[in-house]
Length: 336
Ligand SMILES: Nc1nc2c(ncn2[C@@H]2O[C@H](COP(=O)(O)OP(=O)(O)O)[C@@H](O)[C@H]2O)c(=O)[nH]1
Ligand SMILES: [Mg+2]
Image (cartoon, rainbow, N blue to C red; front, side, top):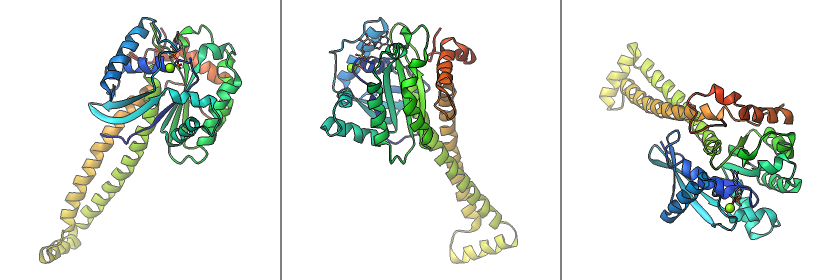
């Protein structure tokens, strides 16, 4: 099975935990998660990220100065490269620049083309009301600006980073995102979710943001495959019907004389085609189902949800209500 190349854009101010998250995600995805693995295209990046991830697991976080410009990843599904995405640290800086700067223009273009956007926010600071509204406001207005003419499906994950540091959750955690919630709810093409993540000795939800984005891509493919399956099935049935009875017999004789394909032969070919479509559909369905199992548990952005309700849902994960319903959750362990 192969996906088209997908573009994932990461947004977040300096110090919110982007490098830490990316290295941790890389570390976790060295082993297959739902059939997915991650590999850098450059070998030296692989070594570096694995080392970073190992250090982070022991609470040795990367230093703020420890920055790299770009990473390119291949995402593999059961051994095949299924998508490539690049992550640029320096683009984060574009957030603080004016919209006409070269960096800001690049970022805007990236956002327009993105299949998935990851927004990083420090949940520890958010929760205390210590994140300036303008910081989040700038990210939201960039997204609004770039998504005005959006025509393809897009998922936006809001990563609430450093969640391992939180003891309780206040309304302040979600309140700054009200504008973004409205944007997402007004669009038929955008799916959004709040995803608490934590990196370090305690790992929280690390692969979920990526699986969430993949889920959108894969479910689109599922709907396309389903349409082709229905079409090829009804074609096969039509030919099969026309190959029966007197009409079918006459058609068969005529085909022998003219050398054209008979309805009977057409029916056999159409049936084989439908079977191929069915195989593809089943494969995508299985992937969809295995992804959806996890995606269902996260606080999705929906209509008619209050800020209190989102906070409640995030709190529910923290107190283990959701994780109790999930069997064999590992390696997606959401809290203890
Ligand atoms: N406890 C905890 N601290 C984190 C986490 N992620 C990042 N940090 C802290 O935040 C600092 C900045 O993280 P970094 O990944 O460099 O942020 P970036 O500037 O967005 O790339 C790190 O040095 C850590 O001290 C996390 O998941 N948990
Ligand atoms: Mg960084």
